[in-house]
Amino acid sequence: MARDPYEVLGVSKSATADEIKKAYRKLAHRYHPDRNPGDREAEEKFKEVQNAYDILSDPAKRANYDRFGSPDGAKGSSFGGFSGFGGNVSAEDIQDLLRQMGMNFGTGGFGFEFDFPSAGPKSRRQQRVRWEEAEDVEREIPVPFLTAARGGKIDVMVDGHEIAVNVPAGAKDGQVLRLKGVLGDGASLKLRLKVQPHPYFRREGDDLLVDVPITLAEAVLGGKVDVPMLDGSTVSVNIPPGTSSGARLRLKRQGIAGGDLYVVVKIVVPKNIDSRSRELIEEFNRLNPLNPRADTPWNR
Image (tube, rainbow, N blue to C red):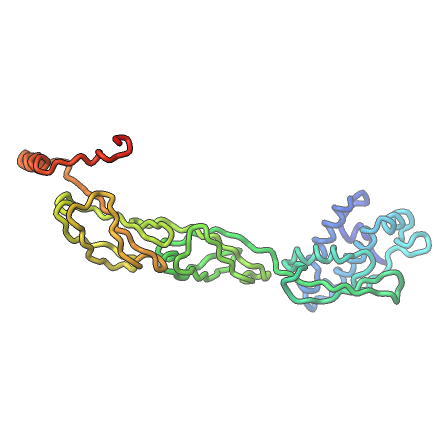
């Protein structure tokens, strides 16, 4: 004697169509042969679930079963056998089931066929459906400044999977990397890069900027200062005489991915000076009169 379809799906006789479909999807997902290879008991339960849904998803069959105990009405028996994907188990229902398993229909994968019975026992139509790639999983990951600038590998954990990610040289903040099919269900991983700040470098596109403090004497007389490079080394840079604070000195192709490195000059003056130094500064000011605000917009 076949089991009551309501009992099979674990729903009440007053269950809505949505509640029936939800229960069917859950059980079909649990007992699907692809998840239980070689398990005869699971296979039988899967058939039973399909048969129950075949009855309860069809309003006419459900009404007949509720009234007569058989989906075929007074002439039928209480819960017929199952053969394949039958009756009203549609392509949409199977699509919903497989989507839960991370296997969707679409244009991105390989094809296979399901047979669906139609009007009579000998009349059948075939409907071809195709797997599509599972929905992408998106994550935001922090990336060290130098790794983004120079390129390199980082490891990320996603849903228990450790994945090695190749960050291309010149990667930008907010850039998205898509790793196709790297997750367990065949889904692709979309990583949005969050580039971390650097202690002294900052970035404008592919150009690098670094603030370099110099003394008043170096600004007036010129000199040489050591400047850090992206690869960790230093280079000696000439400060031209008469360099103002905020001036940018360009080092070609020393930035990111062929960009430039700009040395941004910051003049630092002593907070406390003795009387003799003050006299010398005052004398310097008399000998070199200058009004640096003369050409400002508000004085024109």
